[in-house]
Length: 350
Image 1 (cartoon, rainbow, N blue to C red):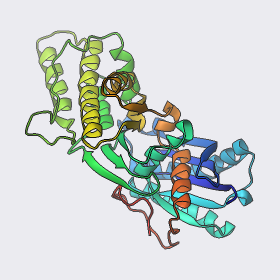
Image 2 (image 1 turned 90 degrees about the vertical axis):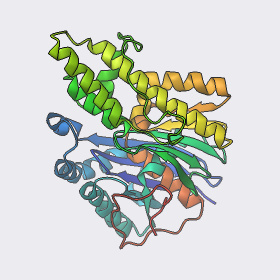
Image 3 (image 1 turned 30 degrees about the horizontal axis):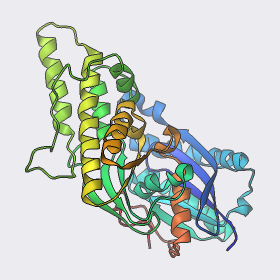
Image 4 (image 1 turned 120 degrees about the vertical axis):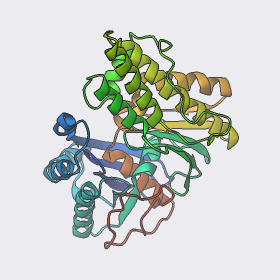
């Protein structure tokens, strides 16, 4: 089978992404272009993503981002053989912009359309950097909206959730703690930067859901966020200066400790020897460092895409589209709609 070009469109939150990949006859996927326009600066003063602002930003950015991706790849729209678009999960209005655009391009080009799962895209994107995944592996997806452990049995065929957060996602906890400490939004990068000069053992913040009777693979970060807030309030009432680097380092250590502990435990329990970490928080320095240490001790191969591919982008959607196309999935109907709560086991909307 000859090579095919797959175009991917991502618009689930505050990044407008367009990616292009080449799918070879043997299932290999090569990245050709990855163009992203972010509206994060427009949300910063609100301390979080405002859905209406995000939707309007996608409308304004879609066509220019498409042009940049095509220019980067050296391809024309007429070279595209299939289109993949994020159908969910995500913000309803934001998803609708991407889906409407994908439907228009698919109809104009007369090519198949695949409405795919955003979470599956975060797994598939690793193949653009490290090549094919083993038949079975575990993925730790950590972002502003998701903290999940996923058992992957064919990246374009079957992904099963084995653990998830019962409240705040890890990235959401970072944003809330950053707000408590008067640090910029999004909270991940500034907390990581502050933590480098702090003591991770300075404050004994709690590790949620790590007791012997707690869910083995689920996460909880709401209590950790509250513990940071209470500690800061106590220090402020006592008139003491807040040691921001120590708070950041101690908070970050608690997050990384729980994430890596449960990821390695799940990999061992499910008999897999490869762990993929993706999502925006995967770029966190302490998370990747601790994951390397624990995976090495357990004899588990760790794969982490470069930071640019960890955050939301069109390349990951194009990659997943290529994998489901190679697996023989049927295209999605043009009547498909956005599904903000699309479960991870639904890789392609039927």
